Length: 240
Image (cartoon, helix red, strand yellow):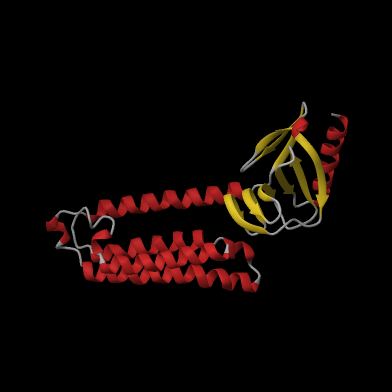
């Protein structure tokens, strides 16, 4: 996550300088008729957007390390979404003051609607991501529900084990990650590409080996629930 936050933060800063040097890149302004562009304080707008994007970029980088240092890992891992959403919302609202066109009310309303929809989407995404994974075993089929849920046939499982630790996560390939919550596909040391359904930092972790290659690692907030699932799957494997 360190590298991702640095890259996104520097990208925001770079975009800020780019917008200042080439104001024609500003969305909305670049499609305006020439007579309406005359009513926009483009010097003030481009300067404001440059400064705003630099602040957003620095906030992503500094905020990540600050919250990580004081122990708020969930907030630290969410800095990109939190800062970008709030920062862009504030920037877009305040940028309206540089537009002196009389018909900007409709555009402002549309902007609020779009940003509102984005905010709702992010809230729903995080709510769904934080919802605990659930497991159902029926007819030798194991179904994992929730974000990045999937089905696995018991006959495809070579073995199952419990472990107090898992290899370090190198990168996220395609998944949801916020604090202790890790769901989706990640690249792990020693294991390589691995599917994770990790709901907490509490050990043990249940490791499923499929066809001697693909691995799935999961756990629950309740240690007993993880251990019970291990016992249920182990019994199914022994009896197949």
